[in-house]
Image (tube, rainbow, N blue to C red; front, side, top):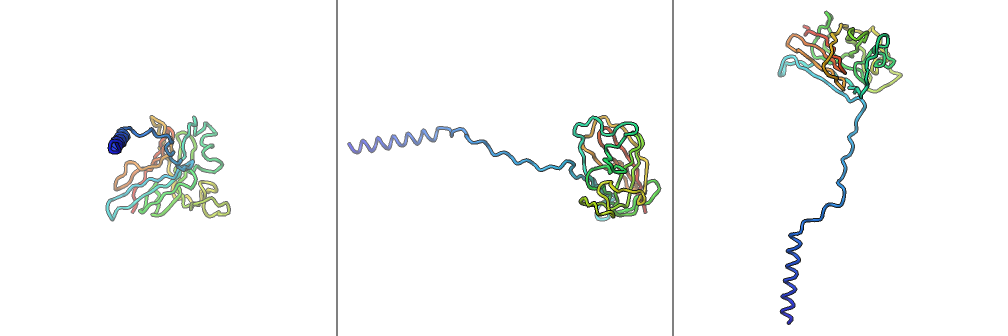
Length: 215
């Protein structure tokens, strides 16, 4: 009798174990962990580089700048006497970017509108006179990394700009794009061993300024 009970018990346990092995696991009842939101800034930092020559002897040109986003605004530029005023935000000239002044760093001399811009670091600004009249300004004004009202020897954006430190000025060619660029972008175009173009694009506007490689 005892042997029959033990045999029956072992068979029952084996049956339960087999059923458990064949039964799919219960559906997950706890919600999956949500990813943490990515920290973002209103105008992310951007940069664009090009190299003249190659390898160890190649020289670099770089533009660093803040990248404002259009954010659905119907008109960035304004009209008539108000053209460009909203982008200036109280400054005397457009910083052509956001936050820290737009910076040009070049490892070789550039010639812009017949003026030699020696190798070094500069600030870039743009005068917005009309939809077809933009002037690129290369300036020796230093840039503040963080806003300091007491620092009058360097600029935050374009606030406090004066033309006495201008190194070169050149009329830009302004063209209409077939689409709207949402985030302001600086870049280089038509680059060769002897020169190229500085390019800025935002909304439906693209403006270019030629440069040559100096000696």
